[in-house]
Image 1 (cartoon, rainbow, N blue to C red):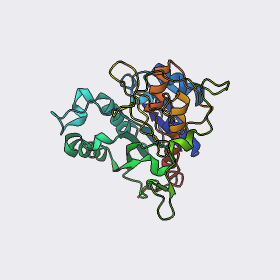
Image 2: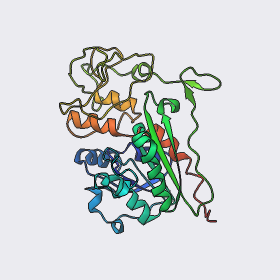
Image 3: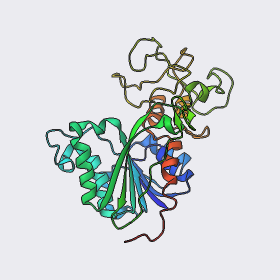
Image 4: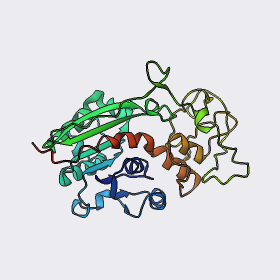
Length: 311
């Protein structure tokens, strides 16, 4: 299927769709470093710029539109008119493209917190908005560790199917669990994921294998907790620590912070995927991304939905 990607970042979601056999025909992001990373690893079809400045007529038709619209601006004061609040312009732009281009399907990724905003009123309004644009919409909270990602990462996926298409698209079925009960596999641990990665100080040719020298203090606070090598990694973050940096999880040996490459491994990026920009920018790109492994599992369920299925 032909895919249009919005808020593409460095391309984690796009890479998963490519791995599942789809073709990304157009992508967009406003971050220069992320666009450079995307172009180097994925392709030149990405357009750098603010989506608000790109009319729908300039965006090609795609069978699927994918992306993760930021939700920080959702206003509780105007919770019943989400798309009309100026502070929610990025959500409105995602909605605008879906409404105007009418793809067969759309996939939107977001943080867990979107489910609790306004005690559930915001997610209800989002579903209502997309339904009014002509889609059947469902959403689900996923723990990506249940899908082979070596990380406790909880994300919401919204999936829309255009109303004239009869068949639903299933969500991927989990194959992993904490204890491996039944026929499931046990969660992949951070220690297992990084066991073959040498120290950055060793003579090795590994892209982006440099790390933050921010002090390891081992106190009970985000980014300062001990990392248990026998569990999946804590969530790889993209947000700052109040001083403009990025909170970097400690290495499973707890002697330093993880390198950019190590965080990318936890996010299931290939070893030859190269990140461009400063150290902070690279960490942020990794933290903002959808793990390609999970994205591929999502994308595989669209492979049989390509026929003429109109009612």
